[in-house]
Amino acid sequence: MIASLRGKYIYSDTTAVVVECGGVGYKCFVTKNMLYRLPEKNSEIFLYTHLVVREDAMDLYGFSDLEELNAFKLITSVNGVGAKIGIAILSEFTADKLMLAIASNDAKTLTAAAGVGIKLAQRIVLELKDKVGAVEISDNSDIKAVASANSNSSASEAIEALVSLGYTKGEASLAVARLEGNLPTDELIKQALKSLARGI
Image 1 (cartoon, rainbow, N blue to C red):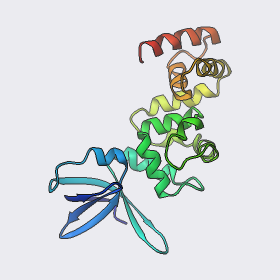
Image 2: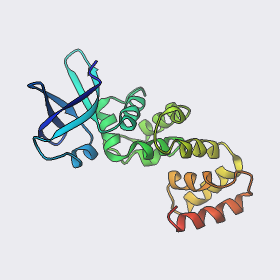
Image 3: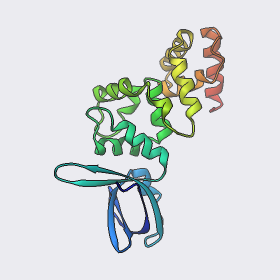
Image 4: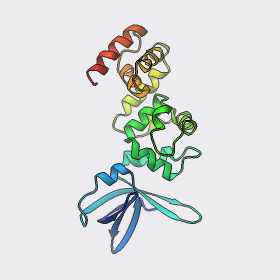
C-alpha cells in the first residue's frame, strides 16, 4: 500500500497530478480543491494517498490532509459510491461540510456533487449518519452536536422551521446544535435566527 508521496510536482490535468519520486512519476487522481491549491511546477509536494486496485487498473488517489483522506474512505464505503464519485463529492465539499451534511440528514445538499442523485444521496446519509462522529475532522464536536440535535424533538422542529425559511438543513442543524438543548422550540428558532443573521 502506498500511504503517501513526497516529491516533485511535474504535471497536472483536470483530474490528476503527477508527482515524481526517485525518478518515477506517480499519477494521483485528486479533487478540484486540490488542483486549485497546487504549488508551482517542479516544487515539492506532499500527498496522503489511497490505492484502489481493480481487475483492469491500479489507481492512486491523492489528498492534501488526513481529514480529506478519511472522508474519502468513509464515503466510498457506501454501496454504489466508487472512487470517482468520492472524488466528485470531495470536489464539491470540504470534509467538514460533507460530515455536517450527513450528520444533519441533508441528502438534498449532497446532490450538488456531480453524479450524485437524490437516491444515492439518501443512501449515503442513511449508511453514514451513525459513523460520522468517529471521523477525525476539525469540527468533530459540531458534528456530534448536530447528530444529537437531530434526534431531539424540539431541536428537530426548530431545524425544520429554519429550513422552511430558506436555510439549508446543514446550516439550520448547526445553528440549533450550538444552543442549549432543553430550550422550547420557539426559543431555539429565535436564538438560531440571531446566530444565523450574525453568520455564526
